[in-house]
Image (tube, rainbow, N blue to C red; front, top):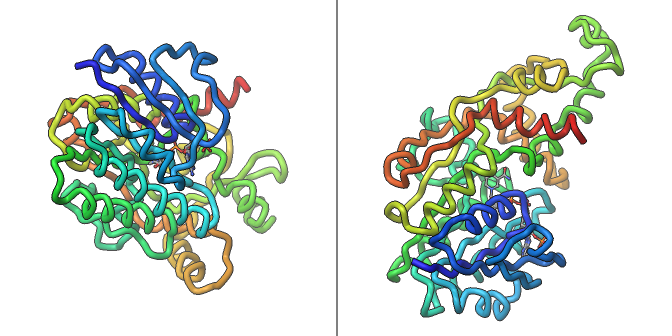
Length: 333
Ligand SMILES: NC(=O)c1ccc[n+]([C@@H]2O[C@H](COP(=O)([O-])OP(=O)(O)OC[C@H]3O[C@@H](n4cnc5c(N)ncnc54)[C@H](OP(=O)(O)O)[C@@H]3O)[C@@H](O)[C@H]2O)c1
C-alpha cells in the first residue's frame, strides 16, 4: 500500500503513540508531522518520520503539509486553554486542515480525532451512547461545543467530495504517556475546600491523604496505544468511513481512582454537581477550566461495538488497566 501519512499534532499525548504505531506498520512508508515546538524524530528512533515546525492557523503551512499525503490525520488541538485561544486553534485551525485536505488532489482519506465530549452532556443521552446519537455538544463547555462544531464543519466541507472521512471519538485517554487526567484532577483544589469536620467524619487525617469528590458517575478510559491502533486502522482504511466510539473495556468511578491513588473519595451529590454547573454557566469570567464541571453531570459511557465490528479494532487495555498503567509511571517518577 506504501502510504504517505501527514499528521498534525504528532508531539502530543496521542500523537506520540500514533506515530509509534504508524512507524511499526508496513503499510505506511512515510510520515510527515507538523506542530509548533522544535522536535527531532530521530531522538525517538523513528525512521519514516519527517518533522516540520508549523501552526495549523497558517493555511499555507497546512496546504504544504497535506499536498503530498495519501492520508491526513488531524490531532492538533488545544484541550486545556482559554476559550478564545482554544476557539482559534480548534475551530479556525481545524477548518484549515479540513479545507486544505479537500483542496489537495492527493489525499484520499482524512482521519480526525473528535471526542466523547462531542456528544455533549445531556440528560437525555442514552447509556451507552452509540454513533447514531447526534453530536450535539454542550454550549456551557468550550471543549464539548468546539468538538461538536468541528464535526459539523468537517461534514459540511467534505459532503460533496470523494474523501473518505473517519471520525474517532475517544473517551478520556490515559496511560504512561498520557497523564492529562491526573494533571487536571480537581483534588488539590477541591480537597482543601472540604470543611474540616467533614474530613474528620470521613476519617481523613488532614494533610495526609488527598480527597477526591465522587459524584458517583462511571466513566471510561482508553489507553493511548489503543487509540493509536484505532488511528492506524482508520488511516489504512481497515473499515468503512464514518464515526467510531473508542474506549477501553469496562468503566471506573472516582472512587476507583481515589483507591488507586491512596486518596479519599468523598461522595458529592449529583444535584450539587448540576447546580454548580448551572452556576458556572451563569457567572461571567469564570476560568475556562471550571467549565469541565459539565463533564461530571451525566454518564458518558460509549458503546464500542461498531469499531470492533467494522474497523476490526479491539482495545488491549480495560479502563482500570489503563488507569493503573498511568499511575504506575507516576509512582516511578
Ligand atoms: N487526551 C485526551 O484525553 C483526549 C480524549 C479524546 C480526544 N482527544 C483529542 O485527540 C487529539 C489529540 O489530543 P492529545 O491528547 O494528543 O493532545 P495534546 O497532548 O494536548 O497535544 C496537542 C498537539 O497539538 C499540537 N498543537 C496545538 N496547537 C497547535 C497549532 N496551533 N498548530 C499546530 N499544532 C498544534 C501540539 O503541539 P505544539 O504545542 O508543539 O504545537 C501537540 O502536538 C485532540 O483533538 C484531542 O481533543 C484527546
